[in-house]
Image 1 (cartoon, helix red, strand yellow):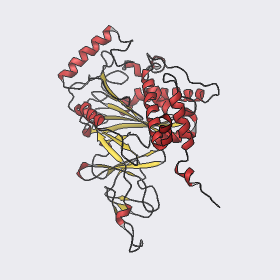
Image 2 (cartoon, one colour; image 1 turned 90 degrees about the horizontal axis):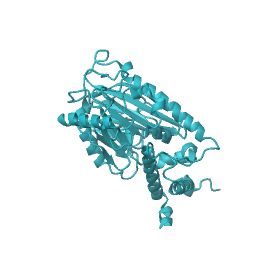
Image 3 (cartoon, one colour; image 1 turned 180 degrees about the horizontal axis):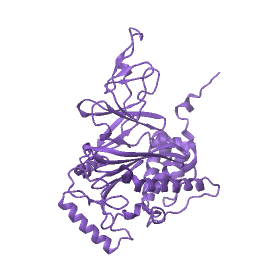
Image 4 (tube, one colour; image 1 turned 135 degrees about the vertical axis):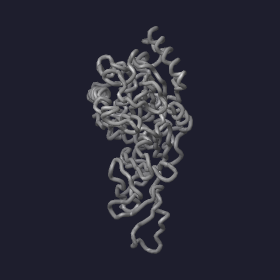
Length: 429
């Protein structure tokens, strides 16, 4: 009796991938996605295989693993990951899985260890992943060198740590890494720290979370705290840009040039976007009163009035860097209709809590905004789940960022699926 269909076992989602590629090739790029992309667990599984297992993901900050032995853990889909600082300041990344019987290795979100020791049977690994100890009962022919931790791709740029779970070669990354290093040089990111962190679970598909972030069409009616500081757009070519706004941009850019602080709009495909834009006139930080949230400025900056350096990295991060503090966001899908959003507020490592900054005040604006966005995304999801849903048109004036995101997503999905299902590429001729 044949118990396993080996062909199906190798690619159990083959038919779903073909259907996804067909729907993405046929969709109108100025409309929302077909319903399965927001609610179907099989399509979610394809997302995890073709996007979150093959693209570069924002994982954490280098300041979270400041010294040798410091580690940071996270989970991407069903894959637990550990990032650890080793010799010569190198940051290594591994699947957080013991090579003995597959137990999870590091159990805490953050920690410090001289060696990585499995809590189950005490198999012990060096910080570079080599197996050092496996007990005394593995037999004379046991090869220690064959059972090191399984590595993942890791890149560090501008104080960010990125990972890629691709089993083969990772996608190109050098241009973005060099750009990020350049834009974040003034902040001296190795000398920052996490002042406060939040984790919220949104009952919505991860793409709805990103879509909501990629437009501020909804901001005026939803985000009063955020609009105490943030201007809804960040480009003088935007149709909403007034002469007063253009004059403010010119003034601030002159100030930033005098401090040798980068501000130019930089796009790297549709995946990455960086630009420094002013906050509201007279406002210097994303706080309730618009004043600095930390008295200790970041890096070599001499003025808190740095506007906001906005950084986009698809598929899972957006960020704001100001003169006094920074806010980084990480999105990790949990299921077809559940997404973990992590927000971290960073300050200079020498800033003293209670003296230089108040964590409750630092986080107040984005705590409110995150909760408002959570409700918006969840109601969006509930509507999409209805049998009445059909793709609707985006505003090309106000929702171009969403159109760009879905163009990137569709292109990457199609390319990656075709790599898994070669007959699709042949069929296209």
